[in-house]
Length: 190
Image 1 (cartoon, helix red, strand yellow):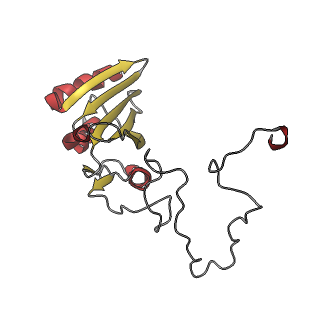
Image 2: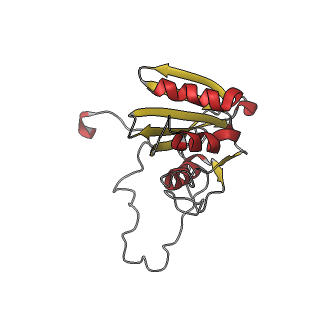
Image 3: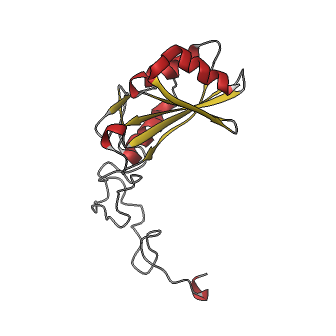
């Protein structure tokens, strides 16, 4: 059972595991950021755990949380193919804090950490190629932060060399950005 994974984590890392919860098969451990890498490695390598399948890594933004508590909650979902249990690790990091990379523990963490950096601005210390993955290089800010303005316009860029055969952006009568302008809900628009 995944509850046993939580017990193994508490046994191994003691007070560095801040809280655990189990509800409807969703077993979660909130840990201190300084054991992030060690906990992931433990869950992968310990024969009682054997969490060999990396499912997901992302973050949630809590901008109203006290700064010392950490604005971002980074989570990692792991699964054991052999033992058929799943666990979610969470940790909290401040805006200016770096979290250890998991790319040497799980290769799949590479792109997920880049996405987390690109969308939220969470930095991963030791990542081999921490740069934007979804947004273009000149994009300013991190669009999944809750304080990112929905109507913010980004700098207009010239087409890069070799892209002259691509279509230009929409003209004003050909479309509009999603959810950026109020629309009326009439029968014509349905």
